[in-house]
Amino acid sequence: MKKTTALFGLLLAASMALTGCGGSTTAGSTAASSAPTPTPTPTPKTYTNEELASIIAGLKDEQGKPLTVVPAAQIDQGLMAQKQLLQSAVITPPACAAVANTNAQVPDGATYAAGQSLSAADKSATVITALAVKDPAVLSGQTKKSTDALSQCSTFTIELAGQKIPTQIQPLSEKTNGDQSMGALMTQVLPSGQKQITLTVTGVKGNLGATAIKTGTAVTADSAAELVKLVNAVLG
Image (cartoon, rainbow, N blue to C red; front, top):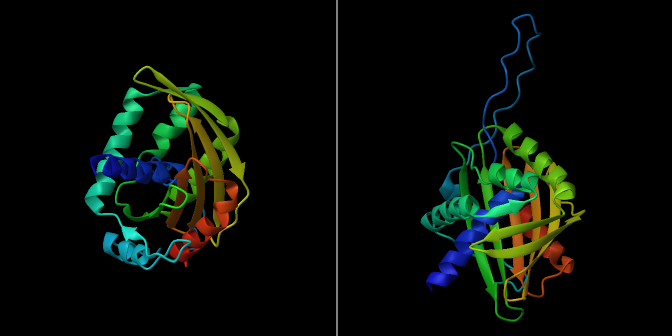
């Protein structure tokens, strides 16, 4: 049970990092007083953790099974575990480590929720996360950085506790209902020699972001459509 909890905690944290929902919330420089007054923009909708959890609770996986909402405490544990993992891991090239560390930061004031589903048939796990921020620019900017980084970090290595994990990421051209979309298929060779494959689809709409991931030993890009459905269900 503890191993399962730890696994999903890390998956949740990883999905938030992959979505580009992390990143700095440092405000930009103040415009000069002589600059023209910008046109007021609509105030983004705010979401509580409970509201996002309610959205997740209404989702079903590809087999029609309702997703299980993951307790907020478990998500927080996953985020803490991810930070500790990054602190002790060596990622090469260094540019990829910088991207991972940036994406691991959850913006101040952000709200989030997640759900998961296990499939005994293909021994895979599906996780969906929803994250809302105060400033839409935070999500859009970080998602673009993450998309750009996919080409720069298509191949990298994670070294942890003396074990090296070669990793390859293949960008996918998946389209969601969001203003921005991104997808990727990540293949890792574990120290045991077994391959772990993680498929990711992300969509961002205003100040709301959603990422769905499916991970297992036999996951392929063919499952992207089912992840797109989950992301669209969150974005509305």
